[in-house]
Length: 431
Image 1 (spheres, helix red, strand yellow):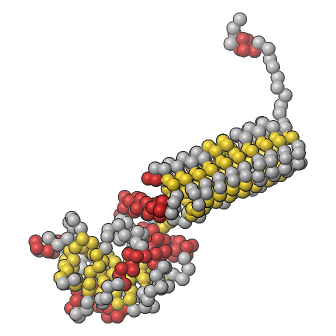
Image 2 (tube, one colour):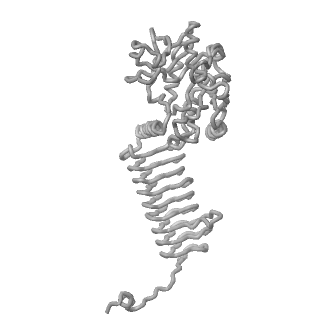
Image 3 (spheres, one colour):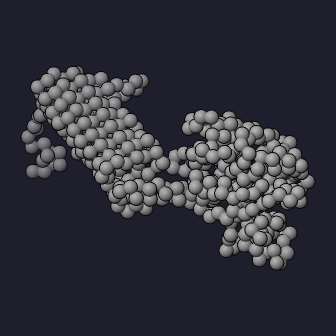
């Protein structure tokens, strides 16, 4: 851990997102963008503060689902709007304070540590853009920031500058204590700006050094388009990590893997696979266009076009096309096609015929189906839970099982087959 405090600004509305949801709660790979920033920050410090205002209760409760020990500071948007107002009430634990924006979910631990390697009263993040049009310019001389000028106020010479503010700062605690109280809102927007500290500090001969950062890591999210682009970058990072670890991916650009997913051993993912939540895949083959949610798959193959819903566990099992499994434990099982296995426990050697359904819901409650070893279940069978099928049982195709079946038995329920002679000819009035 480093001797640094991190402050994350998460008070804004994010109106350009065109959504009722607070900007920092918009999700990438099923987690709010604020999650990824805090996750990286926690790797280097035990002092993290999140500044909240808009939808503060929702932001706080969302963060607390994932993390403990986060400080929350409420910004008074009425009296002290703006980025300068956001840091007015912070109480950092350490002598250096890194101020981040809550809409930068692509930052990494390494990109944050770079600020700690620069010795200055203020370290200011800088983009060097080929086309800086629309940005204020940061004027740098002898590796020190001299001043910031807005584009509309810049001279022709200043407009030639390609360095712009990336919006992340590392301040000494003393600088914040000295200059935040001096910030003024005498501007067109009537807001308090962190950038004004640069001029105040420069006038007091404080050292202000630039840190050139890449746009990928410090990309801000201001629209749904930005959100989609950032999610694609995040997902590519996750896939690159697992490709490097030895996972085989066919057409990796079509594969979707979330942050908490784990792989172990030899794993193959075919095109169109989606794996989410805290899933773990071990020595298994996930075939094309299958979905796995919060489940564990060991020494098995799944799909194509199969769906494992949350809390499923598969070991030494074959799940074929159009099979759906939910909250079930399958060991040594074959279910080749077109079945639903929910709230079930199925043991080794059992074969599930096509069209088998565990009828686990009566409209009010869910019930469990237990199936023992070496059970053969014929096609188009309905198992009405709660029901227990013991070992070495055969269930005939088309059977509806409403009672427990004892070991070694055959269960069969069918209406008698009838024949009506010459019906075809009578129906179609043919001789």
